[in-house]
Image 1: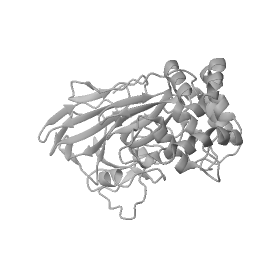
Image 2: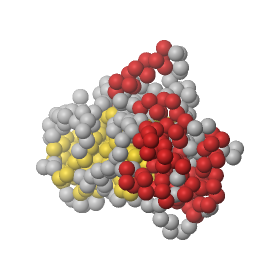
Image 3: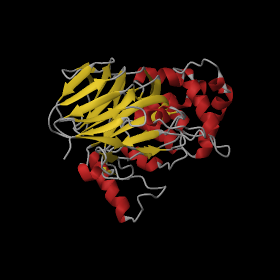
Image 4: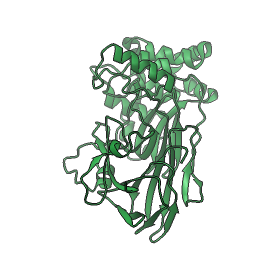
Amino acid sequence: MPGIYSLKGTVKHYDWGGFDFIPHLLNEENASHIPFAEYWLGTHPLGMGMVQSGDEEPQPLSQVVPSLSFLLKAQDVRKMLSIQVHPSKESAEIEFDRENAAGIPLNAPHRNYKDDNHKPEMLVAQSDFWLLHGFKPPEELIYTLLNVVELRPLLEKYNSGGYEGLYRYVMEMPQEEVNRLLDPLVQNLGVIYEIEQPDKTDEDYWAAKAAAEFTRDGNIDRGIFSIYLLNIVHLKKGEGLFQSAGLPHAYLEGQCVEVMANSDNVLRGGLTIKHIDITELMKHVRFEATYPAILSGEPTADVDLYYPAPVTDFRLSAFDLEAGQEAAFHVDNPQVLLLTEGNAVVMQDGRSVELKPGSPAALLLPGRPISLVARSKSIIFRASGANA
């Protein structure tokens, strides 16, 4: 069995996706402006990768590696996507079995649990990247509730019930009450999201944008509350962030590479046209302050930058190589390489796979040392199980 394969992933055309980043990776024209939201590289049944060695016929990745513990993705967030949380491993197993027993098809629009796994995530920005990430610390949250006049009635809910009392109140209130509270705010915000150089650190910008995009039949999306209650985080290119089970979050704008446990379990609470289930979402939310820990990557002996995560499902690092620069390393378990910029070649035992636009990914199997050589300045992500 060869030790390296060319790897082809699966594109997800969700409506929030961008038009250029992923087509560029795949060297595809996109004259029709079809949204390319995600490019999956893994063994998840909803997006199985295909591998090829030399002139052999392509075959499903699962025929070479029955199951990867991780799923690697490229993402392009053109429009903000859902307020969401992911379940713990224990909860996912229970709820997946419950929905199976209820006879809910895996592809049903109202299905919440697509598999029995948790979904911790590590993302690394490939552009300026904006997201919501966990509840604001107490002093910041109180400041927001005091200074956004329309939200001042929520301060009493926080003072009496903490994060859980406040969040349950806004997420479970009747839609009529959502409209009553948010309509004055939305009217006052107007169209500030159309300003040429907006302040994206300001909640008002994202709230106005959300109101324009997600108001349906006169009903204002309750996800706007989360824009004010959660941390707004700005990642610069190359910066990373880990997101664990139960952490409420939402991606707002930008491109990134993301690795996660091999799962597609998402509980949504707003800012989406997909299935929303507030009851299921609230089962899994961690009601606590979050202090975002932005990662810059730690240099390793393999010449890559490692983004540490407190999980055993995956390990993520990135090579940033100049033209002609080489990196050599051992492979202890199956790994996936994804090139996001440049052109490079990966070699092992006389075999080689070129990484380039149109063919940006490779599968590496344990064996003799790997050599990675950049033909031009290149950025290559390396994902594996955490014990690699």
